Amino acid sequence: MKRFRFIDHTGDLGIEVYGQSLKELFENAGQAFFLVITDSSRVQQKVERVITLPFEDLGTLMVDWLGQLLYLHDVDGILFCQFEVKKIEAGSFVASAWGEFFQEGRHVIRTEVKAVTFHQLEVRERRGRWHARVILDL
Image 1: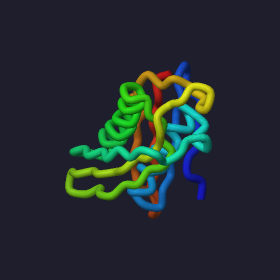
Image 2: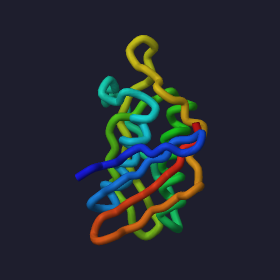
Image 3: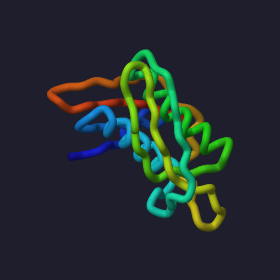
Image 4: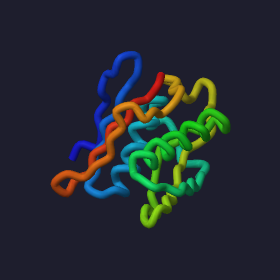
C-alpha cells in the first residue's frame, strides 16, 4: 500500500498520506514530512523525543503533530527518521520520534518548511483506510 505522495500546490507543497489505521496514518505523515526536509536514509536513530498532545479533532491534531516535529527540528536541530504513535484516543496523543542532530557535511537539507497550514486540510476514513492531506508553507 502506498504510504504517501507529494502534490504540487501554488508556492507550497502538499502531502497526501495514507494508512490502514489512524496510528499508521500519523506515522506515515511524520515520514513524509521529513522526506520533504532531508534524505531520511542518512539519519540515524540516536535521540528520542516523546511528543504528547491534547486534541479535539483529527485535523488539528495532524497540524499540531507536524508542527511539533517542525519546532523540534528548527529549535533543537533534530532530523527525524522513525516514528511510533503509542496512543491516539480520548483526546490524547502520545508518539515517539527518533533521529539525530543535524551534522553539516553528513546531512542535506532539501527544503526549509516554514509552517504546517490548515489550508485544504483533510483527515478522514473511507472504506477502512485513512487519508490525510496537509499543505506545507515553504
